[in-house]
Length: 109
Image 1: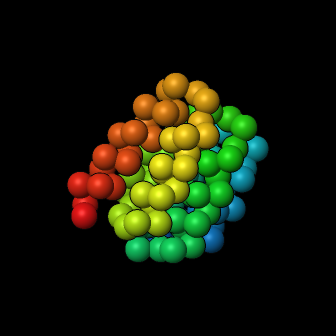
Image 2 (image 1 turned 90 degrees about the horizontal axis):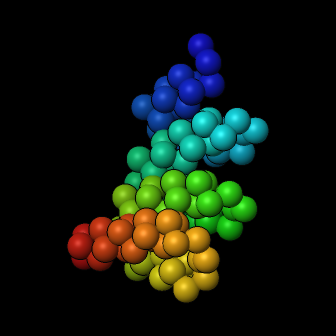
């Protein structure tokens, strides 16, 4: 079983701690898959907090995936975090995803 399969399994089982570990993997594909998996754990505060911390990653692909995953959550905390990112992000492609996620979060109110 390769790492991507392990990420999928951890996602299905809701293993947030394992997903957080995979999100720090050297393989970018594994990292992105883990971030997507964390975004599916919308009832987990730990998952949400891990994603918020990852918005500071140097890689815009990672920040795009994190921003997209944050759009799966709801609540004022997520909205505030996305608004903060909206004013501090420099990459236009990341900004586009942040705007989309912010819209999705606001529609859940």
